[in-house]
Image: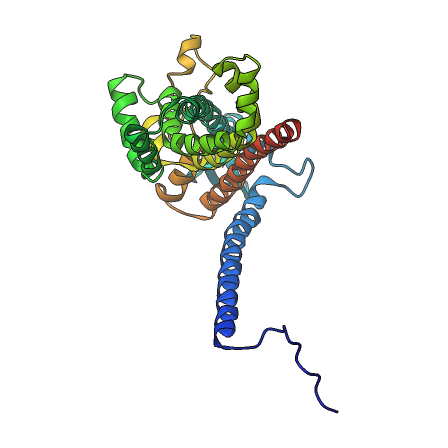
Length: 347
């Protein structure tokens, strides 16, 4: 029986099509490789970090890790039993059992307690810096898109904004240290960290906000102006609300970068250890002029500045696990708000 005849319009195999198919599989394999590497990294963090965050017995969550400050870990044997205790628990144990004061113990810094001050500091840094970045970024985008006339100076400003987006974070850290910490006299504080991180993420916010404003149809502006509204009323009531979903998309990108930066906060806002929480101040104004602990800086210190062992490894992966959860929760909140606004302001 003879083979069926090829259809007239059926593609014929040739060198160009074989090359195109091979290129397709190269790109596909590269994509899968990137995904596999990402899954490997995140899988390792979640697998090892879960051992620190979760427990086998009720309440199944290591509440100490979420509610206490970092402490030194003491390991010793007393009356034939091996004990692992944090600094405060160890001191209370020695007061209860005076004989334990003479027991030889091994200590491991930052290997006990929890990371509650680090969580609080990270959340405050993200919220404060993104608030400043969104306010300044949206105002700048409104001016560039709605008011400024296209010319050499405006094109230069846009080029400068794009170039700033590629500046390394360590440069922003040194800039913040020189301006806010030294020149302005804010010292290592939340305020200095907020403005440094805000300026670092500002180019992304401005660019994304301007593109969102451009996407709003001109008819919205023309119809509002034709009905007698002023230019500012038109922008405020007929342009910005419809651009908000895109603006919030830029905030999601900014959150991921702000939360994960170590160099800028290392120079401007973060302490290795701070006993007091940010709200433990005598004056309300002191809240803004004090440093905080932060999750990325804590991971950096525990991973590179102290001797490594099995006890510090638990803290490293546990902190990284919680850090990813905190960033995911903040980003998810922005996504939910964006989706609600998108459904509300459908064109």
